[in-house]
Every structure is written in C-alpha cells, then in structure tokens.
Length: 81
Image (cartoon, rainbow, N blue to C red):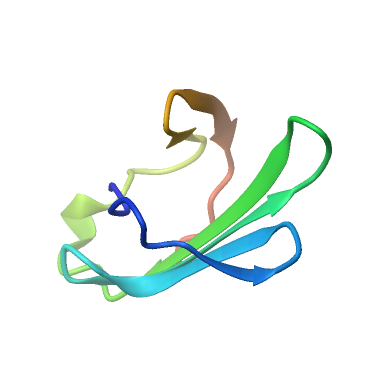
C-alpha cells in the first residue's frame, strides 16, 4: 500500500498522521520521531474487501520509505476478522 505524497499532516511536535481510504481500506497511520534519525510508526487498516488480500500470517515484512530514506522490519501483526 502506498500513502500518496502530501497526505500526512503534523498532529503534534514530531508526530505526523494520516487518515483516509486507500484501495477501499480505511487507513490510520502515525509516524513519530523517536530520536535524531529514527522514527516509529503504527498503521491500522479496516474494511479489507477480501481476506485473500491480507498477509497469510506472521511475521509480516513492512517497509516504510519517506523520500529517499527508508527502512524495513519483520513484525507480528494483529489480524481481526
């Protein structure tokens, strides 16, 4: 999933938020500065049209890129049907 450029808004100092619909999924995402060059992020989606469009299980590989900066991690996601 790609959140379009310019969609995040500053919620408070060091925190940026997005709320909207992408590919039919209601998405809430937050990116928070955790240090000089590090960030944490949380993303939640509801209303996935088909279960087959969700990852099959854990861990889930996630990549966050902002401009030419990015990183990836394997995370354990929560799937609620």
